Image (cartoon, rainbow, N blue to C red; front, side):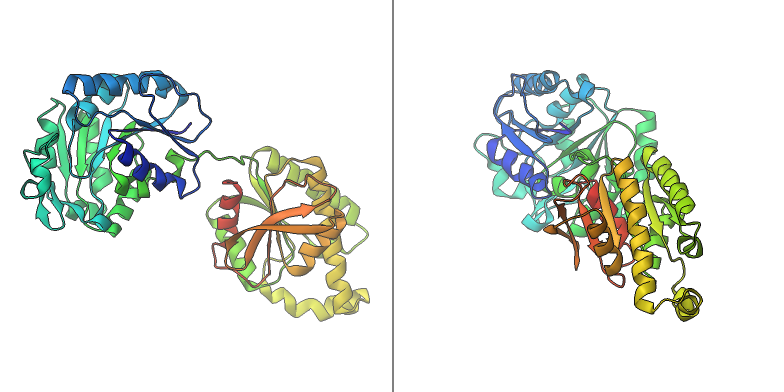
Length: 420
């Protein structure tokens, strides 16, 4: 389990839980706030039904939820789901989280801009009207006494409460301000949010927070919470990329991966590949690739680093006595043999094949009978599995035409392998 969401009612449990579910996370909603929930889910949402109970009872239930789930020992993140109109025991529940964890920061984002709930200068507005002037102020069970989120929270806790307003969020200063505040003391920080773009910026801000943090918000915050807080990386093995494409698009895609230090690259000397020294080259490449993969790094094997190499094809064909088709088939066959040797000696989390000749050569060399299409990683870039091949047929395989894809296509594909 990665994320423990503690909600104060059932409908809120569901509207927040679905934000994680629609991004592929496994989500369970439980009514057992006072017992340990045995589950293999990534996100556990517990409906604690605390909105209308006393402050003391609310704190007791929150602490019980956390202690029962042994949050810290499992490395889970806590998300306190709140009502977007601030009904309930917000301050007391946040204080309860601080009481039983080592968390230094509670980040409060109450807004849901698409539903007319926004926060400006720390004030909660519902469809443009300050909260205290809406029907929620006279709620029969949990009336509201202020439009200020800070005032509402501070009325139930002695923890310091701070605000970061829109100007600082939109200018990118939020992380610096958060660091200054948290370095001084454990704190509650409320973030202004007026638009969906503000939410997106807050998602980026959250991704740069390094201290122990609890998230406090409604469905809006859940929709932008970075995946590292709630999704397990199911496939942790590195991927093998085989590229025989001379396309400028593929060359740029590999260079983009290298620039971002996402993979190690082995450049094949094509002259050696086509010479009597091929067996020695195969041994060297397989050894180097195996070393890379054993370190947990993605490995890219490519036969072309510059699209201008296509200008030397006729010269190489004449030297070797090959037609253009024979040259391409020979290079593809030998690259596929290298790929087979690597795959037989190593466990990989994915196989990426770019260039039509390379893709079919590898498939045939490992004696696959077909390919089962399962996903689309990016436009015209499918992912699936090979059928009845010599290697592990559960390995996800992405194929890409040499000239297809944006500059980040291989980067996105490597990330995709880590999510399945």
